[in-house]
Length: 128
Length: 128
DNA sequence: CCAATACATGAATGTGTGCTCACATATAAA
DNA sequence: TTTATATGTGAGCACACATTCATGTATTGG
Image 1 (cartoon, rainbow over the protein chains, first blue to last red):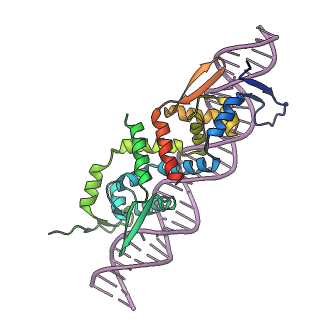
Image 2 (image 1 turned 180 degrees about the vertical axis):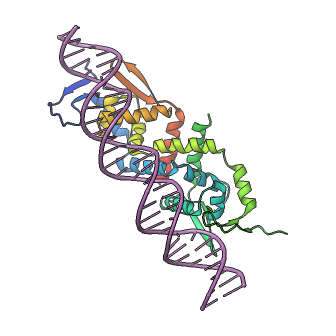
Image 3 (image 1 turned 135 degrees about the vertical axis):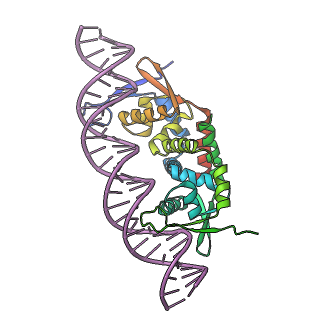
């Protein structure tokens, strides 16, 4: 038998991030091992962050149905064309949307099948 | 036969949000009808936004395995206890985590089964 | 009761970001 | 070619937000 919870007193440096540590070392080690690498979690957060803006969420939601041009998106969402363009660039940089040019018109659509999957998963949480 | 694309010239008010509208009315109307209500999309964006911070993503990821107390989370993620507490409050307010108190120690765990589902969906996009 | 511990929280601060504005670019019509 | 249209983009601003710092609260041990 052993104590699962270990108390460690750290030297009394006022500037230490945390003066006192009450670590369950076994659980922390286990969790650390099971966790995805930092870089992966960082990219994951970045993806969610992009989806975490109402304007961009609406853009993605609109594109679930069919491709739309920039001014259609602007009209549909009720925001300026410039704002839409800026947000479309963000979505493009994250490979969430792609576009095709037909003359002057740019038709945007979803780039990845995962996106709609993620959106549906989120909706399940919201619509309960 | 009819023109699918309709050009509408709006009065030349310099302050108008959009001087010119090139709306495919049929597609816009169709997309508008298919889209979830604004309130739903707003809540959806709010949920993604909460997941869109690296610290919070790490917290959720750590809690996928088992419940952890505040200082274990702080140690695991490598951030101050205060910062963890602030972020845990955010996650609590969005009903993403819950906690139980055992004496002075607060053990946090995921509140909703959907969360891990959403996280997995996001990971599929990131890890391709 | 008193001191220490585990966590919560308000204020302050530095950073990030979504929008507007102005302008640039590219294509099409005249 | 000239003009209008459809979209892209840099700068600037107002606001949101993640962290730190200081302190408050609740529970335990002595």
